[in-house]
Image (cartoon, rainbow, N blue to C red; front, side, top):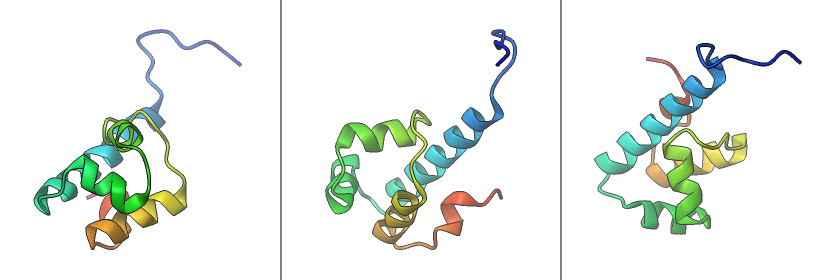
Length: 81
């Protein structure tokens, strides 16, 4: 596997960052804290924070659970707008 230089970025990281930004935006719009979302998902606050910062690639089931906890269709946090 070739090594990436600092000037090359993995496009998947950008996708994860955008996913996290959408999760954060919808959470804040609903007036939820990271703590409240984490509790609803039975996840740690640290994990929710990492998702929102694009530091984790959550499984599909977690993305669907996040959407349900936020009361939105999963497509709203996954789809590019």
